[in-house]
Image (cartoon, rainbow, N blue to C red; front, side, top):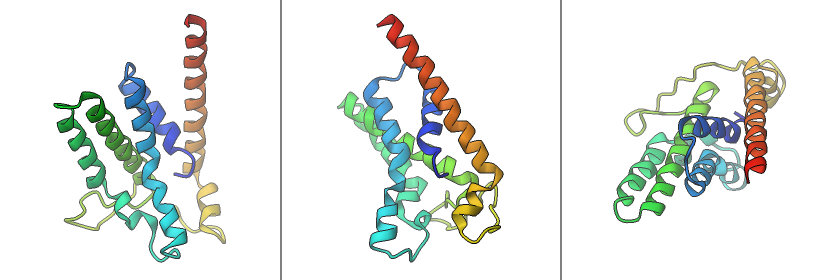
Length: 162
C-alpha cells in the first residue's frame, strides 16, 4: 500500500471499536503507519540494500508483542496499557494491509516465507508505476475515499451535537 495504511486502519478501528477513546484511537493510527518509518533506514542508511519489508518493523511478531505487553500493562496502568495495545494493533493492521501485495513474513522467526495475496507484475519501467497502474491501487483509492466520507460524516455529526 502506498496511501492506504492510515485510511484503512481508520475504517477498521472505527468499525470494530466505535466507542474507542481518543488516546487509544490515536495510538492505533500511529501504529498503523509506524512500520513504514523503516523507509528512512532503507534510503539513508541501508542505501536500498534490502527491501524494507525485511526489517524488524515489518515483522508481525513485533507488533503482536506490543499488543500483548499493552494488554499486560493495562493491569497496572490502564491508560498506558490500552494505548500500547492499540499501537500494536495498529501495527498488525499495517501488516495485514501490506500482505495484500507486499511480502510479510508472518511466521518469522520460524520462517522467512511470504505469501502476498496478489502479485504485482513489473509491467512498467519503474516498480512504482507498476503498482500505480495495477487494479489494487484503485481499491486503495476507494479505501481513501471511503475513509474521507466516513470521517466527514463523523465530523458533521460532532459539529451539530457539540
